[in-house]
Amino acid sequence: MMLDILTYGFIQRALLTGVIIGVACSMLGLFLVLRRYSLFGDALAHTALTGIAMGIFLNIYPLLTALVTSTLASLGIAKLRSSIKIQGDVLIAILLIAGVATAVVLLSISKSMNVSILSYLFGSILLIGSEDVLVVMIAGLMVIASIIAYRDKLLHITIDEDQARISGINVGMMNYLFMVLASIIIIIAIRLVGILLVSSLIVLPNVAAMMLGTGFKRTLLISPCIAVVSVIMGIFISYNLDIAVSGMIVVMNLIIIAGMVMYTKVRSKSKSNYNGIMAKRV
Amino acid sequence: MNILNINTLRVVRNGITILDGIDLSVDEGDILGILGPNGAGKTTLFRAILALEKYDGNVSIFNYTNEDRVKVLPFVGYIPQRFSIDSNFPITVKEYVSTGLTALRYMRKNSDLIRGAGFSSSYSKSDESAVIEALDTVGLIDLKDRRLGVLSGGELQRAMLAKVLVSRPPLLILDEPFTALDAESQTMLYELLKILNDDMHITIVIAAHDLMLLMRLARSIACINKRLYFHGSKDECLSNDLLLKFYSESAMHMHMKEHNMASE
Image 1 (cartoon, rainbow over the protein chains, first blue to last red):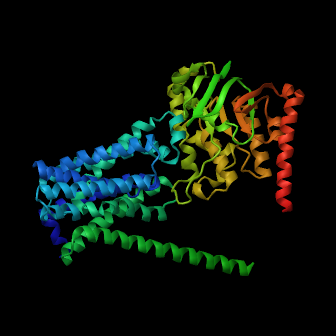
Image 2 (cartoon, one colour):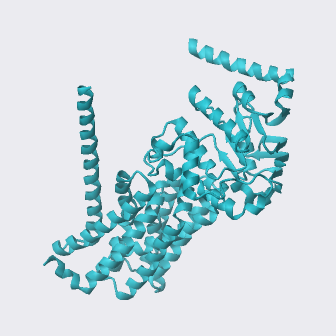
């Protein structure tokens, strides 16, 4: 019964792209979270809104212009971070505001403050066409492959940039590459959960994974698994109960985190009880 | 062979001169102790050597000068004074030490760059055994699956040393490694550095403000406080009355300060 929905083409497309986007976002997100750049995805997505507004204004495919603006913004961040001393969070705040402000100005000029902008704000994975599926697959798999290939170098830079530099890693190059990957994945993630919820895909699976995994390798494996579970569950539940997909995916993620917090609490409690009993016996 | 050579080094940051007119040379097998009070510019000197800081003058490592030396930097192990890691950072001690493989792989690939400057025995080892051996050398093998963030200060220091030792770099630079350690860890690190120098023929440059410990360990001494005040063998340093007076006075000063603080 439940599985009937798998025969629908739009559900198949949503599941396929959703899983790829979820995996790519969570893997890239681990490095963003560890570098204390959790809200970086949010900022990039908001600058993408400027790109989308430009696309609507100039009548070009909006996600393409969005990719251009967010890539420029991310490279700008990388450059600014190394040249002037602005705190990371301030930089992100500026970017976030600038993105929305210019978008609002552009949209009101072109008088296109309408429904289509809502699909960018909240995502529209169920409306994804077969051509879009191809784009998402190519971009998503490219990001996943790059992260797997460069995971050691990225980890090294995340721990200590100076040490990475001394060890012969081209830190500047890697940072630029990383920023470009981040902009690509955020643009395609807008299709899944929308601009307003993009950071959830980046942050939440990793928060949960970091509770479970002691080591880096394990965390990098667990986090995409959590992302996949929440995307699939989110799509199924939202279809059956007729709820917005993007919100449901994020809520699933939050439920997983809540479950893990309780699990770790119970576990540490039972452990300390056990230790208490052992201490009494001795 | 000359491992490190510094000529008329000058570092100016935000209009303030931090180091000026520094000349130093380090021969293979040496342990150069760098003495200087806090704020003397020891860390800046190391950062300039490692191309992490802008400077004027010449710095040569394994006879590669200035920009040219960037390609031999992976042959240098560096242990900074400060390193902290979030206790939530998901990385095990072994995974952290394994990041030292980046340098080892680079050294294997480019071993022709420094032929003659001590060929590392690590080149021929497998990645896994290089990591395990490094963990074993610093005595962290039992903690290898712990999260790095839960280690004590002394253990973290040893993990950093293990990471560097994966590649057994011919030159090792340590910035105030003793400062944050208790007496037991200090002795352990001291013995370890002795072994690295005696048995593995690793040339060491080490900064400290603890005169006694450094005098025991070092073969030659450089005294720095923005400028170079002395550079020579340990014996010369010990027989230089003026220098000893300067450092014993500052040591006395520190002692009295501590005393005052304790009695308050």
